Image 1: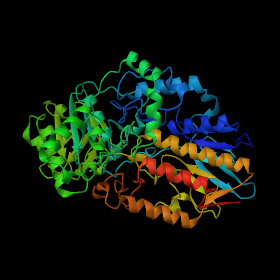
Image 2: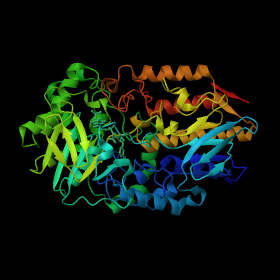
Image 3: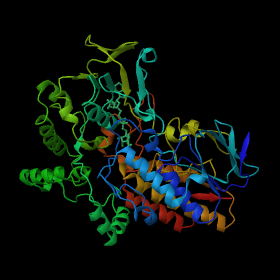
Image 4: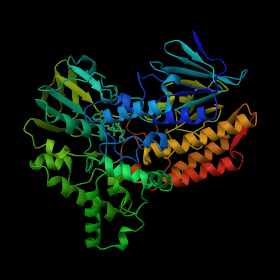
Length: 537
Ligand code: N01
């Protein structure tokens, strides 16, 4: 057993955006901090999601660290950078902040048990390493544990088969191969549009059409961005991120659908669509996801865009059916570049597995209920993530020996989407019950990690050994999560926004829907009031 620094102040799990930001902020205050990460390098989601076509769905520089030392001499080349550029970015971050010296890679945390005698966590990794920090900060995010559906015969497939979030670092040669892709979420869309041009045959298995939005990718001018930095625009953008509902640089459109004419709406949507990215959703009418007539009209606008690009009317109808599968904003927007054109290629088939389910997978391929056998060399599982498992993947046991997994079996309970009653000195960032998936990731992460830093400093300064939330505060936060999601369109679709992507999981909203700025103000107020809703001992 390899014990790591018995007087460690803070152990962080994960070295993606959250872990690195947390490390940097705590280290600046002089605390001893270390990261355990199961990955072989930094990057978190960008380490694991190295599948073909993986790229951001928030535009840069909004998607990035706000730390000036990092952005001052970093130049993004694309508006929505791909995973390779993100990897280079994380290397740059290491050069600037010297983070790797405090990270143990290939170190998967399997358990964390609270020790009341020492008021420390005993954290054990698969490779035998142990740490006993005063504070444990889980920065594994929401997309840490891949979900693989229980498909009959999947294990018998003799070709190459990978979940996209466990894609081999050395990549897979798809050229001239027969490839099947199960899942058409954001990941499936990215894979399909990337590999469609190279493979011999592509069989797409779609259960729910993706209401994907135009990305409008473009190259960025280094000169223009240098000038933006000099003129203070980068600073303004990072500050502005904190003031909006989604953690981007613009506020939700204040108008109601009902107060507009069809012509005004058409022109407004065309303009928003042309901008690409989440602008189309952010600047949509406030009630566009809740009023039936608004849902229908904006869906029709979107559907026409798709039908104009797909030549085969049968495929067009499968991709964008007359009856909307769910409101446009019910799932996180997927951004596409050439997704729909891929289906015009003669080597691409599209099977509606909601109508013709996958009956079995055998050593040679996939059989669907329409009687078709899809012979395959490679099978790609773009089937998403078990969101709450980001935290519950580790056997975390608190004061009374109960685990987080047991506690969350019937639903998530946390205070402020960062702390859990019965688990002292435990924090998590970018997980359930925070603005997480309803926000630009780095914005949410920085807000939460700043709060955690401040809380730890408060305890250190005041010689406080333990903090944990009151049960009543947790109950209140749970109510807030439901209350803010009550009318949310995301409650109307199967998906990871409400935990229903995984059979058997409790149906519940997993994000705080009150907006990033409101969340930031609320948690700040709790801190200002001496951490109202928390017990210190
Ligand atoms: O996962 P998803 P994702 N049979 O859960 C289908 C973020 N992200 O990885 O819709 C057949 O959205 C399922 O079908 P249905 C990004 O924010 C970020 O695509 O449930 N199909 C769906 O089509 C994104 O929004 C990055 O009917 C089955 C798909 O699998 C989020 O993560 C990279 C099935 C799953 O879609 C998740 O997107 C990747 C079955 N039994 C993701 N089970 C980066 O930024 C599931 N499906 C790097």
